[in-house]
Amino acid sequence: MTDKESDATETESPVVLAVDNEKRVVQAFELWLNDDYSVETATSGQEALNQMHDGVDVVLLDRHMPGLSGEDVLEGIRKQGYDCHVAMVTAVDPDFDIVEMPFDYYVSKPVDEPTLQSIITELLELREYEDKVSELYRVCQKITTLEAKKPRQRLNEDERYQELLEARETLQATTRELVTTREMSAFEDIFEAKQ
Amino acid sequence: MVSSDSSSELQISTADLDTPIQSTEFFRSLVENGSDAIVSIDQNSSILYANQSVERVFGYRPEELIGEKLTVLIPDRYHDAHFKSVDDYLESGERSIDWNGIELPGEHKNGHEVQLSITFEEHSYDGQQVFSGIMRDVTAQVERADQLERQNERLERFASIVSHDLREPLQTARATLAVAQAGNEEALDELDEVFDRMDALIGDVLTLAKQGQTVGEPQEVALQDIVEDSWSIVGTEAATLETTPTLSTVDADPERLRTVFENLFRNAIEHGGENLTVRVGTLSDTAGFYIEDDGSGFEDSATETLFDYGYSTKKENTGFGLSIVEDIVRAHGWSLTAMTGADGGARFEVETQ
Image 1: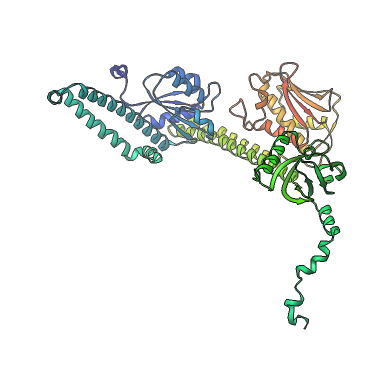
Image 2: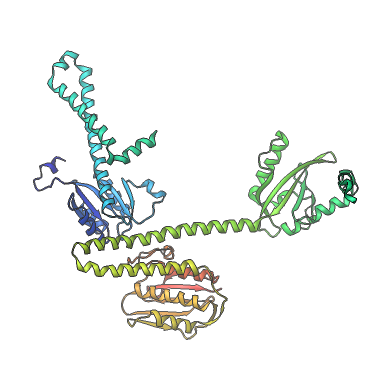
């Protein structure tokens, strides 16, 4: 992450890697997404794995490809530890075998521009949510650790402790907001289903 | 007139029936001539009685069964369960299985299994406990149900694959159109090819769905004629057809057989490469014929997946050609095998035995 931030040539927009063995398909994805994202393309599974890097935020991945299949690429991405989100964009009807596949989203072809946009928006929000929750966890850990060791008065006097409290409040508000915004409707479904 | 007091005159009381139904002959006839097989056993599973219908269902004459253990009519794998079930019932009085219309297989005298729907009864006779099974042969119904289930599965797979194969080019068409709209004129020309491919797919799917499963009345067909006809339709100048002079006749639906050769020839030409020779001949050790080429063979493709719906190593193909071939061959009652030929090319053998 710090590498990416310090890299002057890196643009601010999120990076999407589109993978499909049909050249026209990845070209169209690029056209549709170019305004908001930095789009990279690959027309084979092997090419996709060669092109993967830490800066990729979302991968759009075809399943049925000659040579390395989408499943193989997905496995490779996870094995190499990239923390990007992967959407399978495929004409293959989902069967129970998807249970074993570590993707984040599954959509049936043909997809159009609005569908693709909303998938990416959702996956990027998921990413943001995950980051914020991790950060919130870290802040809370520090607060608990300090509270166990330091007397109340010392805590109240310490500016750094006060900053932690503020950070916790902000992060709690942000994560709560992320879950309840309209775009995160899928998140609401997740919590609904749990009840 | 006569009906002035119908209630007393027309009603038949059970007392009136007493005479006929008390006659042993009435019962014997009812039981012997019923369409269901009836077998009665004692507590040790020895057969006390079997009616005439056992011969139709099990192949044994009733007198062959009297005194035998019931297990002669039960497949081996159910013997232990049978004895346990009887013992448990005698001990506890509790029925561990449904006594009314349970479906179980029986064993025919000649060894094959018969699907039965069985109802059990018990009564006391001569101071001993007697169990009877009233058994109906439901083999035909069970087979029909199995067949329907297989057909449903096949249809489900078929629908899923067809939808996959149409979605893929649909995505390509949509993408190609988007690229064309963005100013790339070349992309527009490609749309034609995409539509051709979808058109070919729909054609193949219809062939499979409509005709794949059935063949017309078979007639004697000269293989040589069918082979030449088919080649004239799909053959190319880059490929040569050779036939052995011994090509005989087969009993086949000529139209369907032509489809077989057309698809196999097309398959050879598309996958075989340059300067291809396709050879058709008669099988030597069994009745049938083969189609072989000297191309690159199946390479890495597993031969068992060749005939699957939608399987193709080439993106522009529908992957239905060999499925169609297999369906037609099967519908004729023949068998089809794919193997590597003498020259390392693809070889398909059709056994017509």
